[in-house]
Length: 275
Picture 1 (tube, rainbow, N blue to C red):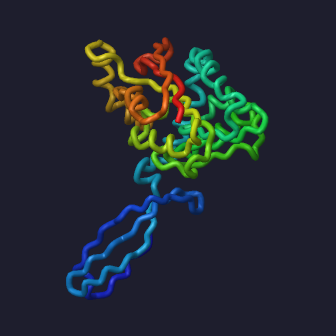
Picture 2: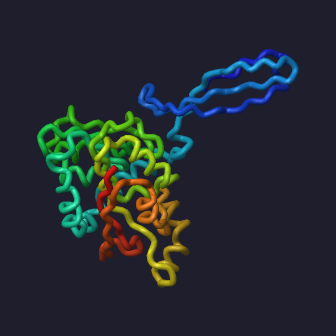
Picture 3: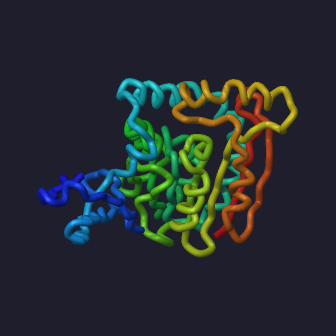
């Protein structure tokens, strides 16, 4: 961040950060544009100083490197039975993208378990974002296994609340088990709509809170703080389906399922929304 360079008579001034609407990528890091407005009662000078603040640390505070490496490895090794059970639902969902989406963004790409369902069509270009840079090697390997040429897959360390893509730049956005962990669900969905082209697809699978009054919902409430700590910010009690329904998509096809391998992380909602 640019250092403040104030004259001596400005030491009693105060500073207000005014957020700009532009965010951009510089040297591999996502930044948000701000203006620092300096108010000085003695001189009435109002210099406007351009500064840049990195977005990722503000939204997704850095974890220890060992934790991010361990979490990436754990996801790669411990989700096998879950992925086997949900494979039929994902196959059905992602079949809707075939022949209809050339540029696809996957938020929270993680280790890349979804790539095999949609990334093997000719001409597909995929942007995979994740705040955990340790996911990259697994995602790249998954893309290669899916038959995606290396030049057609780009991993970016970023957060879903500030996607490093232009407006109306992708045909589809994919997100599975992501909205449980983002800091701001509504802002993430706004970003999804922003980067989608008109008529574009948002394909999602998310776990949501159990029905109020049930034993499972009570247990979820008790364990939610622990879950957030050990599972990289994952919340057990979000009503994510309602958030998607209210996000402003033109139409929404949403379904619910309970998975035996998901234990406390039930039920799931899955479906497609169109911009």
